[in-house]
Structures are given as C-alpha cells and as structure tokens.
Length: 75
Image 1 (cartoon, rainbow, N blue to C red):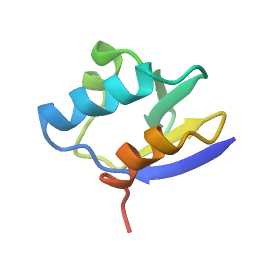
Image 2 (image 1 turned 60 degrees about the horizontal axis):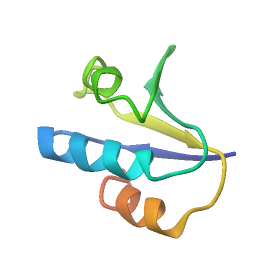
Image 3 (image 1 turned 135 degrees about the vertical axis):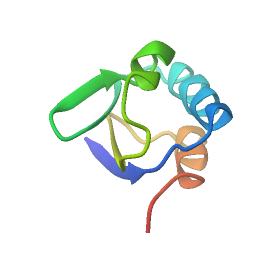
C-alpha cells in the first residue's frame, strides 16, 4: 500500500483528483483523522474538511495517478 499527504483547496483540484482516482483499477481512499472516504466519489471527497491535510492510500503504483498526486503533495 502507498500513502501520501496532500492538500486540496479548490473545487477544480478536487474534480481533477477524483477524475484521476477513477482512472485507477484499484482502490483509492482519502481521509484525515478517523474519517475515510472512497476517493473515486466526488460527494465523498467534498464531504471532507478540505482545510485539513488529507491522506491518500492506494494499492498499486500508477505513474499517471502519481503525476496528478504530485501537484498536491504537502512537503
């Protein structure tokens, strides 16, 4: 399993992230603290507190998905 900390702050960033997650043929989860949602669900992602740093968990390496993630990775 792979994990990255990201920050999504604008509506268009959320939409791009969800589109990238939907192109994956494996599970992608997004959350913070104890709240975890399916990253392929736009309603699920918008239900999170986007002011918080988010944790993405995904099953396999995928260069295209990781390229999108790289835009939102927190240092």
